[in-house]
Image 1 (cartoon, rainbow, N blue to C red):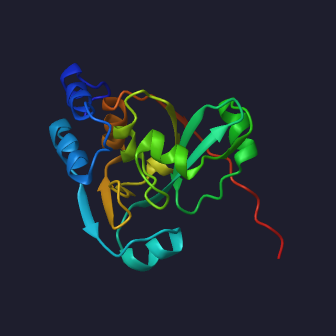
Image 2: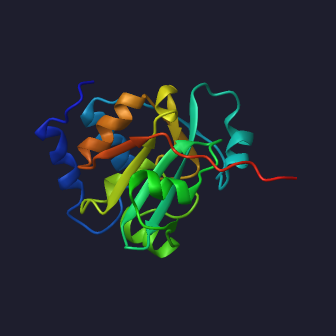
Image 3: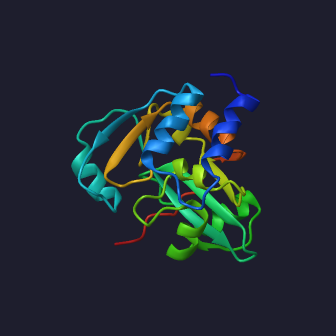
Length: 190
């Protein structure tokens, strides 16, 4: 898929947001289909942690990812999307992206901005951010894996998408991305 979103790709997102209700999984898949993005989804019991996800997914190939909903002390909102094994150093990440001190956003803010609940944080929730309040940070190492796996707005499923299609989706939602080497915390001494 080419690197620029066509204007006609952006129209479906605007139409989908004429009401305040968050997009559903069906809305997401319809949007992806209009973009010409192929995905594959598996169903499983709800998962809330990386460990639970490992237990239910089996041997799916590719990159298994997590998304961190963050806020800085100036009120900017960030979504860091990384490989599930990356232990993100928030202090170093703030320096890397030029943000004020980062902390996790509240459940209330998460729902207000992305229309999802904890356990379902995903870049696909950008469909629910027509005001573009979120700045997206993609880990460059994660983007080397394919396919990438994320929840499709619901933690009872996992959807595989190619890295270039993920970027096309994010652009079609009207968001730009920052791609960086996400700093990792040093392991803690035992």
